[in-house]
Image 1: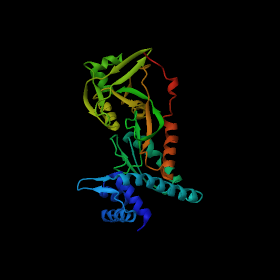
Image 2: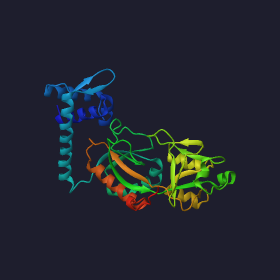
Image 3: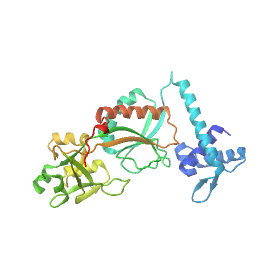
Image 4: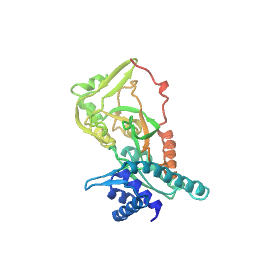
Length: 312
């Protein structure tokens, strides 16, 4: 029995809750993973997992052993990395999930430079705004906008996106140019609803000017859970849309969108990189996160919240 492979297989079964999912993430057969865990249990003479036809649960002994195993695996990875850093660049497969507009407009165009610096890192990228089960899907990290609600994750704030309110010329010709944000809450106006997956509802939008605070809920023709879809709906004239400035700027210059309500302030959208607390920050993940930080410093530098206006 290869004790390292056995411990790695056991840890992945605990994290995914499934022999099948563990086998998929380790690129092994389910039979091999099962045999490794059985051999590990035989060597330790304890039952690490309770197996049923529907799920796998860790025993009390297994939970205690798992905590020791993940530390040991992390230490081994650190030892190998420290010895090889001088001659070997970070390598391996990195699974990440990022918002689709961020992937299309910022991250992917910059990837050639990252690849040139780290040619041995393979990136499996999901481009979505959906809720991701980082452990169950063996995702190393996610990049997300907005305040994170899953407090079990380790999160690092990497930037702040400036937000603006936009509408297509065709929409303004039909509904008229609003002079005050509160007008968007009543006919003839519509908004493009942005339905965040983690909340399952359309988010109200708060705007500020000279001590006045206005929250806009609004009626909608369409509600979406993807930034690119929201942008397309705004350009199509389906309603007023709230967008990060980096997404809208090109379309404003083309005359496809018009920015509304000059002088009104919206809170910037914080951007985070998040990963599971029990996931070792490997060399490849560390350099990827550092690269994201540098990228966001160029496109959406962090705002000092202490310098933000305060409103009643």
